[in-house]
Image: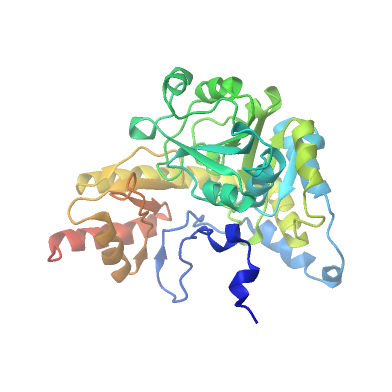
Length: 371
Ligand SMILES: *Cc1c(COP(=O)(O)O)cnc(C)c1O
């Protein structure tokens, strides 16, 4: 018998899978590492989910998330045909790669198999490209994680206006920087292929670009209930766009891709947006206060339009801070890539969690570790 390894496609064997933030097994940690919302879902959402746990668990859920799509269409002023719901927006991003790009090496041109994105941005994108056998085509952001202008992209060496698919995280992760709709629009209009604006954090931002998805036929906007709507556990995201692109995604969708309780939870969420908007305001206020306090302690804090901040700590190195904070029971995130390795990414939690972090930081600064 040959080793089971030989049964695996080389593409899969050599894949570098996505590395999610740690979900710790021990209790009592302040968890500021995966951009989860510190506030629970609205009480009525919990009730709706609890009520749905009954005999109907033996039945298949609605295959097209019909009720949820109707409500989302009303929210965005469009038709249900402009909306597709996914098992998290991650599923929809993977489907977009499969629907719009060709695996490299087929008869496809280079552009037809390119998944283009800015670097740094969401680290799942290159994994999705690799999984499909498409070419991940990263282009650096401008200084301070700014969006390059179309003119800069034209003059730069590395940008493909014909790329089959371009993924833009807006506001950007992991920098937290927000982008203006008019700048995004210029890029969308210059692209020949599909552009996905990944708005996972848009509820914490000053501007949203969802109107572009209903105005420009090659643009899709991706949203998620995970971050702003406290529903990571339920896995519900959606895309808005031209019915022709939405239909293409629908053709490759798994029949029952969104579980029933997820549909119930997301649908109930849309009936209580006031509750969530108050949470957005609280998180933005905590973000301002934490940013200010960390600046005063000598951290360089990048301006954020998201529910996290990217900060450059004073001595020692960021990677060491990660361990020091963890030893003090506060989890934050550190990324190894050279563009961001001098920073820590800190999720905005409650005011109390910010205070725990700040007093730990003060304690570490008072007794600098030997190294
Ligand atoms: C969290 C996140 C997502 C994924 O959201 P899910 O709906 O939970 O799959 C997509 N894009 C970005 C940039 C994210 O940070």
